[in-house]
Structures are given as structure tokens and as C-alpha cells.
Length: 207
Image (cartoon, rainbow, N blue to C red):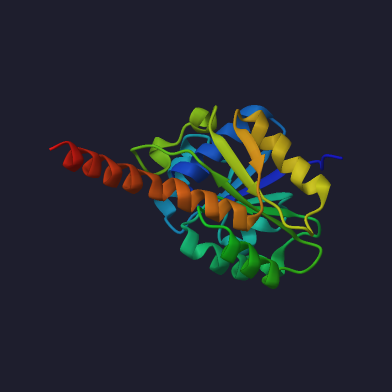
């Protein structure tokens, strides 16, 4: 069963966070999207561009009524953000992130959060040569892979809720364990180096 989502909070209004907010806002007028960023200018731009409906004063203010929280900060700040909001969360809220490494983050976050708060790691494999909220666009995730990293304790309805939501913004959503995700990302990141090494070797062999 898919959970009813109305209040969405995006913490970190850069390219990914801003684009997610725009894509979700384009789905339903009923979504109320609150944004927070450590840069006041980013929040003002996001509000001016109607990427978000409300600017939060601080992280706790941002999440008090949230049904879904998307942490779109640099991966090094994810756990810090979770610690700052954990005491102000509504029971049953779903939290996800956008970081490119999952196993350690998922473990640490689940150790911090109470049992009635649900974290599912996420990694939208999308990007642009440009950065920042000024470059945000709702179609950024169209036809790109969006990896969700549930654990054995992840409730099916929470996973299905995120899977459905991100599918609706045009992403190809797949689920992998945190460990499988990290192994696959490591393989992908090393592939250009392997190919270039093999190419050099091939040229040397033919000389």
C-alpha cells in the first residue's frame, strides 16, 4: 500500500535537490514543498523560481510536518543533518538521501533514528555540467536510473511509496542493497580507468 504524501521537505537546494523539488512539484498541486539550505541565497532563488513553496528557518523547522524528507546535501553532511532533525520528526516520516555511497550512510543513519522513522537510501544517477539551484530543471531525472537501497528491515509500503514517486518523475527506479549499490558504483567509477589502461596496452602491443 502506497503512503499518502503531502508535505515534502528538501534539505539542500543545489542542482539535485532543486531539480527533485521541481519535478515533484510538477506532479501534483497538492504537494507542499518546504526547502532549507545553509545558503540563504539558494533558498531565496528557489522560492523566487517557485521551486519550493516555503523557506524554512532551520532544519528542525523544515521537517516538523514532513511526510517525506529528501536530504540533498553533500554526502559528508548527511549524517550531520539527520542528527540535527531526529528530535523534530513526525512519526512515520520517510527519509531518503541522494548520496553516491550507501552502505556506511545507511548503517549510521539507521543507528541514529528512532524505530518509527524510516530511512531508505537513494542515489539518482543524474547530473549536469552546471551546478546550483539556478541550473535545476524538472526533467533532470527523465530516463535516468534512480537507485533505492532498502535493507532487510525496510517496510514494503515505504519502498513502494518512493519507487512510485520517483518513477512518476520519469526515472528508472531500481532497488539494490546498500552493499550491492556500492560495489556496482565502484565498478562503474573504475571502468574508464580500466578501459584507458587497456587501450594504452593495446597501442603499445601494436607498435
